[in-house]
Image (cartoon, rainbow, N blue to C red):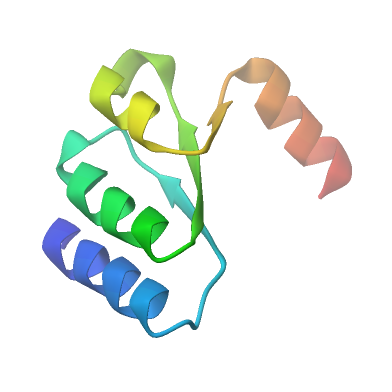
Length: 79
């Protein structure tokens, strides 16, 4: 599944169909796809758990949002 999602990210980015991509993962396998999407001008956002995120992934994305208790409570209030 990771490969399919990565391919779709790159395909959508390079065809100009997206300007932003939000990923919920901690897996560094997505780094090459993120870098390719960024090369196509896509802004990448990562939603992650501190317990399961790779440092390389944190460095690869444009924006980072930790899904901690405060984040979850904010989403509940706004949802």
